Length: 140
Image (tube, rainbow, N blue to C red; front, side, top):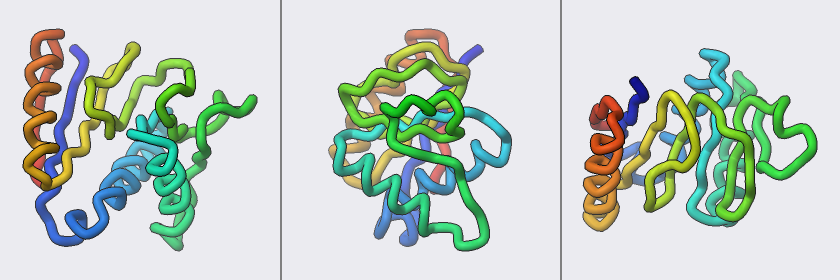
């Protein structure tokens, strides 16, 4: 059964910089050798995630890049802005307002502390449940 895990940002560290949680989740996926797509809301957010992944862990390196190159299939973490087509992967980190598209085993929904973000996450929660996903919530 596929899983949808919702990570609700609550801790000050992530409230100040929500994309830091995305990097932490990408780091975990990379350590587990789980090929991952990070579905960014827009190109600016995709670039910000790319930059942050270079800087956030000085003792480690996560193989990543913006999607759209010939070597996408060899890159562990692909950051995907809207409008860029990629092959499905077992793990997706979704930052978009709609449910993650495609076929996957697990999706991680990162939800900011903003009340409007929380409302959108409730809609996605219901849609994943309707699709037969096991749905979980984690306060971060």
